[in-house]
Structures are given as C-alpha cells and as structure tokens.
View 1 (cartoon, rainbow, N blue to C red):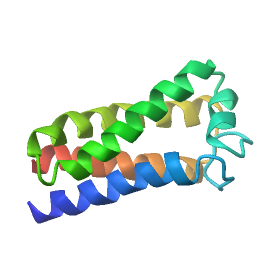
View 2: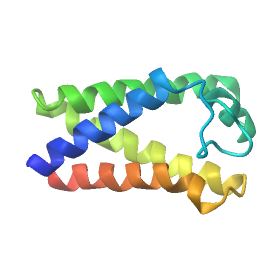
View 3: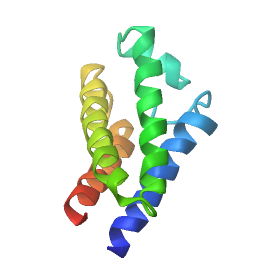
View 4: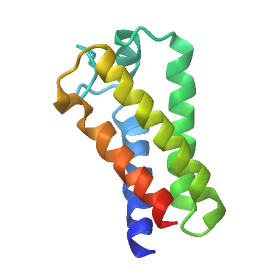
Length: 120
C-alpha cells in the first residue's frame, strides 16, 4: 500500500505542477514545436476546448489522487482517468511524430497510474 500512496503523491503533484505551475513554460517534452501547453494542443490539431477539458480533468484527478490518501474511494476513478488521458497523450505525440523522448513523461505517468490501479 505504501508504494501506491507514493505513486499517488508523485502523479498528483506532477499533474498539478504541469497544469498549474508550468503550463506556460517551454520544456523539452512539449509536443511538436509548442512552447506552452495550450500551443501543444494546437500542434496536435485539437480544438481549443479540449485544452480546457483535459486540463480540468487532470487537475481534478491530481487533487483526487492526493485527497485519496485520506479518502480512498477517489483513487481508482482518478487513476483510471489519468490512465486514459496518458494513452491519449501518447497517441498525440505519435500523431505529430515526436521523438520518443517527448513521450517519456506521458509514458511514465501511464505506468505509474496503471500501477496505482493494480496496487489499490
């Protein structure tokens, strides 16, 4: 159980960091040539509303994973949402033919989310 708790904190804080702290920052992992999260969604050819939908889902899931330490019924739905979103993220990186390095964060979060699902 302790491993699942650690993964919940890592994934939860990671999602909150990306979406609330670093959303406008350029990183080496942004899709295509994007320098912000919103530009990344545009690079994938997605409509603007998907940026807000996915962002909202990831922020809520990140909070739920952390709160799930004290209220466990939140963990499974949150981890499932993150798993589905990370599969989508990997598909988007493949769509724009990003090098594998750019997909690494999404892949690692996917693995951690699946591990949470199995450990809980």
